[in-house]
Length: 103
Image 1 (cartoon, one colour):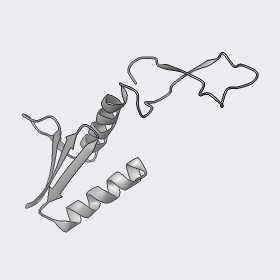
Image 2 (spheres, one colour):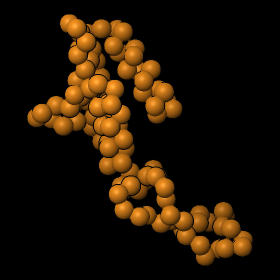
Image 3 (cartoon, one colour):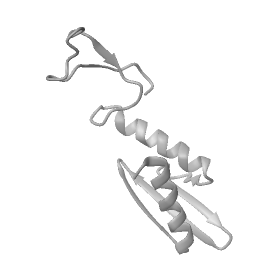
């Protein structure tokens, strides 16, 4: 998160000692207006770190070339579509995503 975000204690889960406390979030929480941006930034950093190149026209398109093969990853909000010319590249992408994002 780029800014500080605080949340109230959920009803039924209040700390009896400090019922009026609010909590500062350390990372994005599903449902926050900042969550999609945080997700996109995390995913972008991850893809760039493992060798993908961001599209020059479409900044949500990422491409990885290995010899004569290529894999393309397209991000749209919280959806990802991908495909490649090599089963190995596609399998490596799935394994990398599963490991990084606990899928």
